[in-house]
Image 1 (cartoon, rainbow, N blue to C red):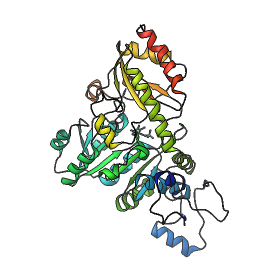
Image 2 (image 1 turned 180 degrees about the vertical axis):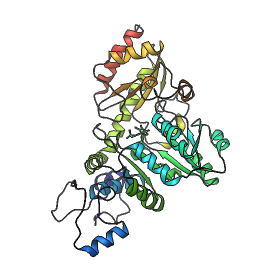
Image 3 (image 1 turned 90 degrees about the horizontal axis):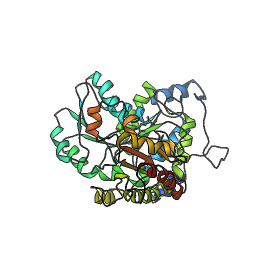
Image 4 (image 1 turned 135 degrees about the vertical axis):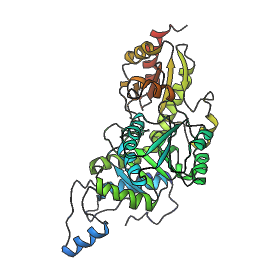
Length: 400
Ligand SMILES: *Cc1c(COP(=O)(O)O)cnc(C)c1O
């Protein structure tokens, strides 16, 4: 047993470093990686007992001590009862839908969600009789109008990718619960370091561990957090049966990432706020999307709902796609890659990459213009990131 397990007073930073650890008889200080596919039983009776209970160490498709430690630590940080780790963020979304939905059920989903999430719902779940209606993320009335008797899930990300639009989690949770609907929040952009959806009434929290939980762009993985029954038993059953399992090595990278999560999220946020303010003053920049700016239509909600504004800044440049590409190609420090949540700053053109598989109409509906550029602000010196962007902006419109 972990000596901190009975201390209900521990704060976020302590849980991030300590929660979930169970030391072995070797007395190791750092968490070990159990890189083993199966486990040995003392005798046939023990094997039979573990298999029938589905508990204890059996087989790493569904039970592994390193994966369990990551799950317990993330559950503690989100304030959820149970967590199931998966091989990717998409696998976490798939596991949630496959477990909680059946043919004939209906989802109401924000139209501003990760592009692949839309593909998953439209191309695959739809094929099995699960229909989805898309609504504007921040339009509470539209969510209400979209509800049908067979609606089971509300699904959203806040802030959204890449336009940093917010949903009022509390208001949507109240609406969902009045209709017996579960609210699922993809907390990828804020992480529990900046936003705790369960405190605002969410029922399930989804993570792409690939982003900020890792924080250094090394591993792909994901997780679902929620209550003991739906996540700890039902989604666990899907994982055991279908096998979208997280590798123990990746789990270890993520759980070490959690130790520095809050420090990193505040550093990303401070640098992003600085750059957003600076970008807003540039003549070549038409519009900046960042919830930390007073010009953001949901700035007040962001202050209430989040501890800081996050590390993603999007902006539109004057001159459409050619200008956006010119700016991107002029950078030397920033990496041209679609990943985000890395210590290294990244720059991307959403319309032709992350949202390139959407139809032009779907893109239009999501508000993704050709002039849009997204940066994931890393941990380099913010003045260096600024100089890198300045070089490109100067080529678009000569500074006075
Ligand atoms: C990346 C991402 C996902 C998918 O996660 P993977 O680990 O790439 O499968 C889901 N939601 C959001 C908001 C993301 O940014």
